[in-house]
Image (cartoon, helix red, strand yellow):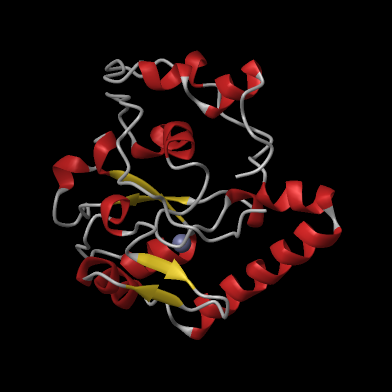
Length: 198
Ligand SMILES: [Zn+2]
């Protein structure tokens, strides 16, 4: 059984490189797959909310309008984290929020052990009562499901049912990292190599 809040072990290297869409929401299927259907800041999963997550501009559009539709400037984030981030410039969460720099304790609190992780926690309010209660709720649901209800465990910790078929998409400016499509969650599910939960 995997606990619901474990940050990645290593910095994220982009797997996809779509280019040329005129509007940033068109990058959504790529970002969903890229960031494993969860918020890069707090790890909230798509399966836990209705309506999917938001698209966050790492360098805010207000300060860097030229990066509005640049894929490598886009992150996948939940509504709360995206709203808290606003036009702030933060350390890059894909390299600052790692298993050895931030961990979630059994009571739902996050503990950051590097200045960059601590800065993100502080600026986004990741230790406010709202976030602590949300984490505690999911920690307890997942633990209960893991010990008593395997089907529920698969539903709360599984991948979404609607995995994006990236091979069917044709970004207007091409794809700088085409190998990522072959390794996408959709293709892995088709090949039978995608685990049931993550
Ligand atoms: Zn979040």
